[in-house]
Length: 381
Image (spheres, rainbow, N blue to C red):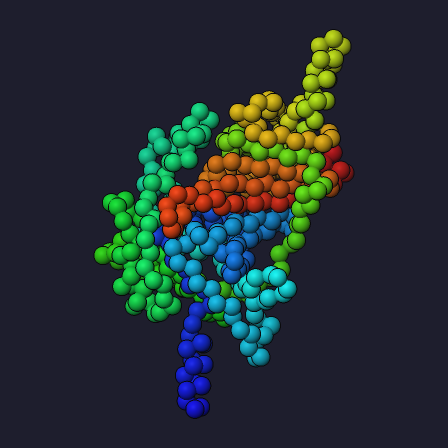
């Protein structure tokens, strides 16, 4: 009887907390690169949502990448059971209606480099220069929905939590077509264990196993955004409208200011400005300033540019330019961008990223979100 209980305990001990696999790591890599500005990242495996990766900077910038369950060809999560000897290490919890989750920290740059170990993890590795250029042109906004995602994702074998040998026998199901891509299977056994990646370029080619050290998680800064207190909400029809504007700014700029006014006020002021000669109010303006001067860029009230524009009052809020410039990598891989500012000046930038579904074909929406605290009035002036 005791031997039976011991064997059952060993089986439970050997079962990973998390096992997941993807047949093409490019989309996973793009979601991670979008927040790759801090080496230490907090990874949360959630039973319902999937994988949430977060980084922060200077206790006032928080970036989060959401990698949902349906982005993976295989997703198996078993909540870790706290052990009396190391209960303080377990981040698994189930409180009320919240789904169980496990959190650990990893060096993000190491994970990204491992995904690209065969040099095929970049989004441009199998895309022509023409298709890449079309992706960011406004007139190709509709056709862009199909660019770079014409890969077969139908079919998937039964998932098992076995050793690497079994995973090797099942690598072929993660490949298809002639384009080279990197397939990955990851596993995490729990606190104190490394994050293990099994990567292969094709079913008959070389494989490699990477073990990335994990660390006890440190609490990230909490920047809750109150949607009811939103004073400005903008959805750019194409992320290129914001990306190109930020790319044009001088990197030596110290702060960036978002200035916006309600559309009705802009129309009224524009009419009176023609008679009095006073400058009209901008609908939405980006102003960057530094030691060498300032730059201003105004956006028109055009649905082809600003798909949604909602402004309840005049808004002028400043942020450190270095923090806003961190979003450029996320802008490069996103299709649309949402910009929101709440009453206290907290900025939320959400980037929509299309990811192929592992089952049934088609695409699924994923998000990268940045939240940034505003500068104090004394600092911003």
